[in-house]
Length: 232
Image 1 (cartoon, rainbow, N blue to C red):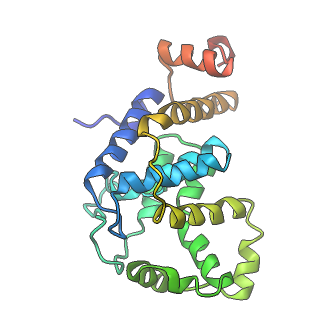
Image 2 (cartoon, rainbow, N blue to C red):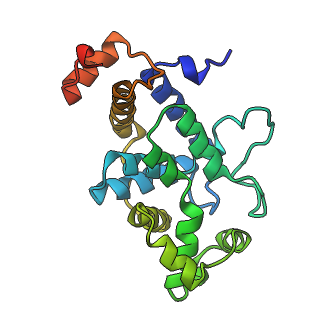
């Protein structure tokens, strides 16, 4: 029996989403050069090396979560990496919505779903960028509307998360050719819990919380962030 996300503790939510990532070790990434999990770990490692904030690192890690998370309520449709590029299923949006249901921050979830605009922007401003893509990625780009127009590109540059969205595309591209060994998945568990716990704390302050922390989670929140139970 599946536990409703609304009744999960933050720790249970992290365990759940990391289990989904582990399932990605059994699936090939769309470009076929590595598994979904390996791709996610490479992208997250590049993000971490660039010194970005935890939410952006997690967005890099979770970008393909839509391929392995449960289908939308009332739907039986799923997305597998071996599906062709013509699939109409928006797995980025699906993944972002799933992460929202777990209580992850708005910024992180918006970045998870941002790949399409970021890639269309790159195709618009970088000569031969589209030619550098795999045949599958080229087909996906075409179906997503192709490169942005000059007007669309300038408008996208006004996005408050513009830099992060472009960086995510660059990390994804770089991850496909890197030979570095990525850090283990467990490296990111503390980051995920801390981010989710802080989101809970912020929700509590605005009287919008829908999660309860266990004693162990409260102790970890106190240890890592100096937030005590009486503050919540």
